[in-house]
Image (cartoon, rainbow, N blue to C red; front, side, top):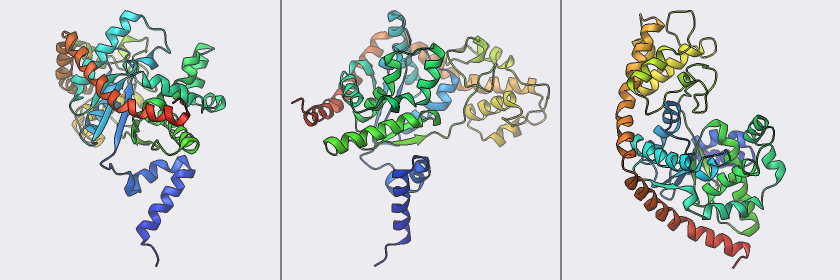
Length: 364
């Protein structure tokens, strides 16, 4: 008897997904299996590079808060092992870890709904990274886009920079994660995790699920001084980036000085008017409006007046977050205690998985 059309379509799409990574996003939207099952688990990490900026919040953290309410098991890691691929002063790194914890909590991460922990405190990450590294070829890593970009910047990158995608894969697979929120620039690194799950399973028996991408639909926030590049904490221009702890006066000044153009009308055309379009994107995102609704509110304004409207919207959105970060920063013991609890909860999940990996590899 012929299978129903829906069933045939489902299997056809999943067949395409297996052999063509470019179709994964489409398949993920259509295949019923890709809806969050009861056993679904989300993992994501963020480097402790100080307090996040507006682009981090709108591009990732806001989505993290939503995911903890949508999935039954969620882990968020402050990935300090990744951070030392760049030189870090020890005292600054310690402070940055607590600042990031405070920022995540202030943005809405709930440690009762999500496991929030410091990566380096769960040693299983590093051991699984070594095991997976022994299954990874050098050409496979050499072709990843971030190695190409960052090694060119430094002329010659470190071994840690070269192999950190393997550590990313270990972060994900250690918890048998099924879903990973990523931006489009991270999809190839997630594909490495998928490949390593297959390689391990083929060699040692089925153990790891192949994690799926949760591609965020959030609009990208650009630099206020160079709106063709992403907003970045490493930008040397202080007026380019809005930190979550910027005062209302700082926010207003940065937006007032944002690069636009010589046309006074407010329109949304990222190709020809990136500066004004970036302001519309920010306004729409912080005020929870569509681009069309933001443009409607800008009706009759020139860009100077519109910057005032955008400033008000950003300040209104960030003020409670800024105040909560400041409150949490003042209580280091509380932050350290929460991270310690998160470490224990993460290790409860990680230790049995690594023990099974060690057994299958032949270590015991």
